Length: 336
Image (tube, rainbow, N blue to C red; front, side, top):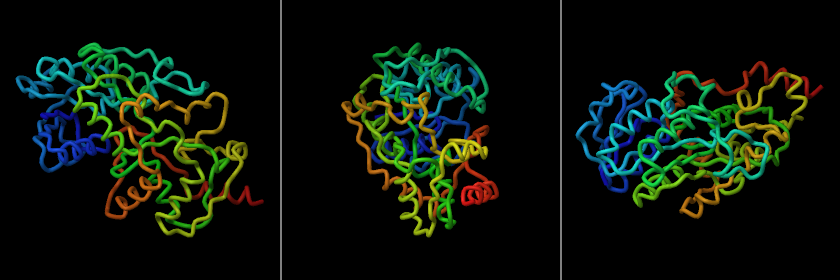
């Protein structure tokens, strides 16, 4: 197939490009040439979809499908989709389960209410405070340009794996590799639902090859690890002597430790977040989604970091991780 990938140099896009080339497809990437190096073997087009002039390089070119793995601004996605609608019959967009508005029900599925996005809304890609609303707007932009029968919306959950540009799992690996007592949040049996970037890529490419439309939560159909297993996997992968110190969530709150931001992937067990790690992946599984053991993702991410891999976050992405000094203070207070 002749596949156009928007971006294609970072994390999800990079993985999709590599997998598509491995399947023998002809891949053209379209990006500004700023985020990362183009993968060998692609035809690289330069452009900027924030303006009408910026998408001009796409004019007059024919593709069998377009994959948009990183669109953040609805107006940009709408402009891109309109630019290729006459020359590419299928559009796949990688969205996020963050488009769902409430998380107090179990399970969260594709029928759960979403944020009210706007298809032509413009904005700053670095404004991650509006990510959920903007991503829903991007979905609507694809629907407006292509319709539901000629598009795929892949709502990915929390993604991990090599070439990570978010930094959550890499933070845990790096911290645990340093050894010693490690502040660990709440209940070690707290379930997590994480998906490897390579499994997202495989699912998207399978659907694109089949020109199979639909909206899917691209997540394991049930929690696939726990907070305790995550840390154990990190200890095993790094060969560290780190010891997790499981600390009461209320105590962490009282000492100002922030869930998610300071202890990545920690979502407290509260009524309002009951569905956060309980997203239904049944539809995607029925459509062919397969997920690898989470321990493989941890090991492969550590191997990537050890081989020189570096987390390169997008501008405006909030940093993850607890400062060493603060961790030591909280551990000392817990010990006392």
